[in-house]
Length: 202
Image 1 (cartoon, rainbow, N blue to C red):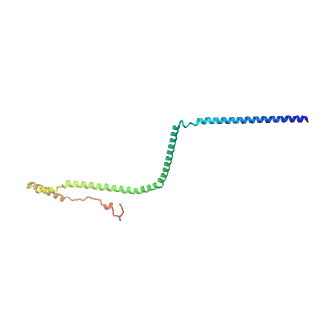
Image 2: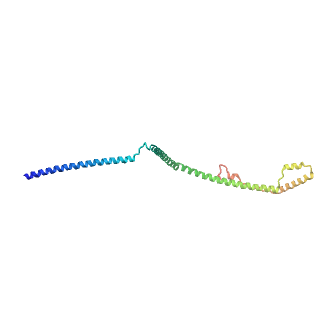
Image 3: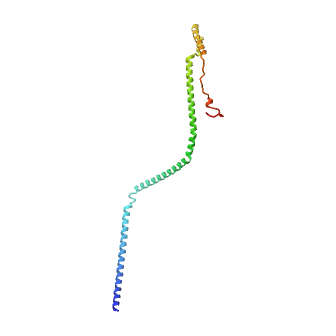
């Protein structure tokens, strides 16, 4: 019985000692945690002091940088607006302008055909005019051209012999003109190229 009491007394002393040791370890851990938190705060404050620059020392540079950033943001907004406008214009061109352009192109093809026909008509007229000029030059060369005013001048000349010679030459030339057969040139008809409204076009 006494041995049991002695054993129980020894156990109670051992338990109290273990409780005191546990409480001592918990206090050390709390102190170490507080010290770690304090060191972390000090380290963060030191890094923030390195990163955060005093504004008063570099105020001009900071203001210029802010202005540059604001201008850059403004340009970006303008560029985005321009892109939106280009997108809307592109959709308008694709949906509205291109069909209108195609319709006008089809209409212009008919106008181009008319222009080609008109150019061919003008070229044909130029060929006819050139042929007429050649005939006129040939007629003047073959028949001769003697103005009526010059005939009147000859009648006023007092020298009869000279006047008779000239008049005889004129009579010979007139007789040769009468003997020459006139062949009219083959000309075009405007009705063939410019018909009446009730007729079919050329």
